[in-house]
Image (tube, rainbow, N blue to C red; front, side, top):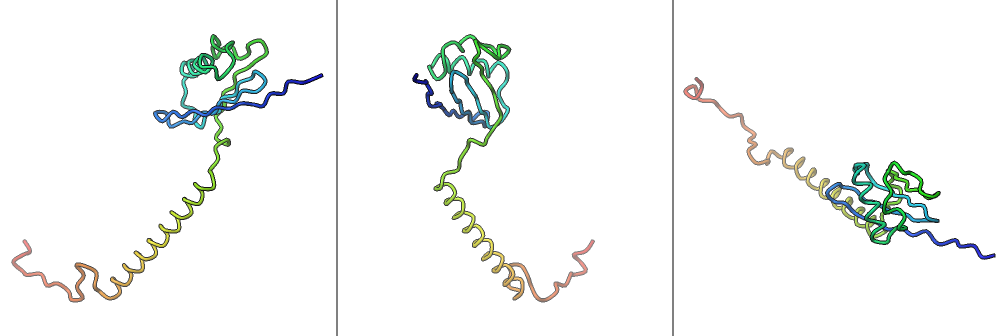
Length: 139
């Protein structure tokens, strides 16, 4: 007997206006929607599921499902707020480390320069002598 164990499919969507990323996973007829933030209203969730079905990302029977119908013929649509599926690639990690090291080096040099200028009294506007206030300037 041959079992039909199809590999789970997943699709990723971005919603910049909501600052949310969404991953839709389809496995054995069940649909799991993982969003990075809880920014979808009930109406938007229903519309999104219907759009996914209309475009062929998920089975067609979910075209007329509302969120109140959690189960449809034993199949379910689950909404989760979960960002564990996001992965930072090696290139992104290396770029972040380079930026951090550069920022640390720049900050160290700028601090050393400022300390040196203050210590020698050569900071712009600094004068080693006190400024005398003329009596006519004070009212």
